[in-house]
Every structure is written in structure tokens, then in C-alpha cells.
Image (tube, rainbow, N blue to C red):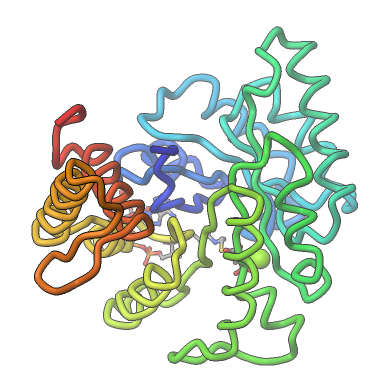
Length: 294
Ligand SMILES: CC(C)(COP(=O)(O)OP(=O)(O)OC[C@H]1O[C@@H](n2cnc3c(N)ncnc32)[C@H](O)[C@@H]1OP(=O)(O)O)[C@@H](O)C(=O)NCCC(=O)NCCSC(=O)C[C@@](O)(CC(=O)O)C(=O)O
Ligand SMILES: [Mg+2]
């Protein structure tokens, strides 16, 4: 099972209190932000705070940093300040080309060499937040072996599309589908965008249920209150795990009879059904709901 990245929580990089406590909320990943949640006048202070947080606080989860775009006056300074602290993951916002990804990849390689980190240990992900970026989604997703995920950033994306966000999400359906396809074709994870109204639990649950059904591996969140709600949706139920176990057992039985197909309660069980059942079981094992090797 690949690394779980169900809840990736943004933490403003210039907020010492939030940086200090970011690890207590059980997010799979915390994303320390030095991009849009940090004013230009605060960028230097934020870089320093984020560097020190990564270096001196032991977080019980993956630690990512969202840098400013590499073509802005801040992106290279962000990398220079943050890479020596060894974050697990760099998130590039507003990605538009494969060349940007390769440029950052090279900067990371140099920093790894200079600081004695093993080559390839710092991973990358990118967020698609413009129409131009969406047109290049697969090129971006497959531009570097460091790439572990492709995300969508809906707030910027919809501003670029000259529209607004609705509760039904129709305006995001095409982009979400394309990002998911690009990520799957590149064999990396797909991460959905933030839901900005932290007080609208029903809206968050409805959106998270939809993106889980589409196939996303996780979602960016902005508040600890959203993490528990998200995990409930991303955790297989006992009924789902039980069904997956019965599917695998039925398939073993079919194989013993030299058959590649069998029916379980009238439903055909074949290879793709088995593949999905195996994923449910891997997930259950990764979450400690089942023991490995059973
Ligand atoms: C939304 C709100 C102001 C609400 O505040 P509230 O005060 O009502 O929160 P409360 O629930 O009362 O907080 C209870 C306790 O949790 C602590 N606590 C809260 N949030 C925490 C957190 N994030 N990290 C650690 N700690 C946290 C808090 O300190 C308190 O601790 P304590 O006092 O000890 O009890 C706050 O959450 C917040 O600032 N969120 C982060 C916002 C942010 O990062 N935006 C940038 C990323 S999006 C973007 O850029 C768009 C995008 O790019 C996205 C894409 O690409 O996907 C695109 O284009 O779409
Ligand atoms: Mg954005």
C-alpha cells in the first residue's frame, strides 16, 4: 500500500502557534504554507519559522511545504531557506509546465547533495490551479520520479475560469476528472482541493463523499475540524472489509477449480473485482483494522 495522504492540512507558515501544534490533529500530512496564506511582507519570517519548525519539532506525520511558484520573486528563496531543514515533500502551486517541475527537481537534487541527504528522499507534488496547467496535467504529473501526487486548487482554478464555486460542484467536475486521470496514468496520487467554509460540515461531507467516489486518494484541508469528518468517509466500513474478504475467498475457491470467474450472491467476481477487494484489504491493514498477512 502506498503512503496514505487522506488529509493534507494547510498551516499558514507565519503562525507560530499553529506550526507548533500542527502535529496533534492526526493529519496524514501537514503542509506548511509560505504561498498565498502569507503576505509578501511576512515571507522572510515565515520561511525562517517553517525551517525551524521542521528542524526542531518532531512531527508524527509527513511534513510538506507549499512554496511560491518558481517564477515569482519568492520561489527560489523559499527553496533555499527550507530545503536544508529536510521537508518530506515540496508542493508547487499553480503548476503549468513539466519544465518547472524539472527545474525544482534539479534544485532539490543539489540541496540533497550539499546537505548529505540521500538522493530522491525529498518528494514533490504539484497543484493544478489554472486552465493552462490543466492542459498539461499528465506532463506535470510524470515530469519527475520525485512526483508523488497531483492536486487541484479550486479557488485559484475557478478564478482563472472566471466562475465561482457552487455547492453541487458541476463547475469542477471536468477538471477533477482530468486531474484524476493524469495522476492515475502517471501512477501517482490524486488530491482534491480545500473546502473553505469550515463551519459547513454537511457541505464538506457531501463534497468529500463525491471526490472519494470519483477516486481521489485524499483532500487538502484547512482546519483540524475537517480531518475527523474526512477520515470517516475514507475509512472502509466493517461491511466493506467483510465483503472484500469474501470476494477474495470466493476467487481462491474459483482458482482451485481452475476457473477465473465465480459468482458471489449472484454477482460476478473476476480479476478487476478482486483488484478492488485487495485495495480495500490493503487500506484496512494500513489503518490497523486488519492484521497484515491474514
Ligand atoms: C480557516 C481558519 C481561519 C479558521 O480559523 P478558526 O479560528 O475559526 O479555527 P478554529 O476551528 O476555531 O481553530 C481551533 C484550533 O485549531 C487551530 N487551527 C485552526 N486551523 C489550523 C490549521 N490550519 N493548522 C493548525 N492549527 C489550526 C487553531 O489555532 C485553534 O487552536 P487553539 O487556539 O489551540 O484551540 C483557520 O483554520 C486557518 O487559518 N486555516 C488555514 C488557512 C490556510 O492555510 N489557507 C491557505 C491554504 S488554502 C489556499 O491557498 C487555496 C488553494 O490554493 C488551495 C489548494 O491549492 O488546494 C486554492 O486555490 O484552492
Ligand atoms: Mg491556490
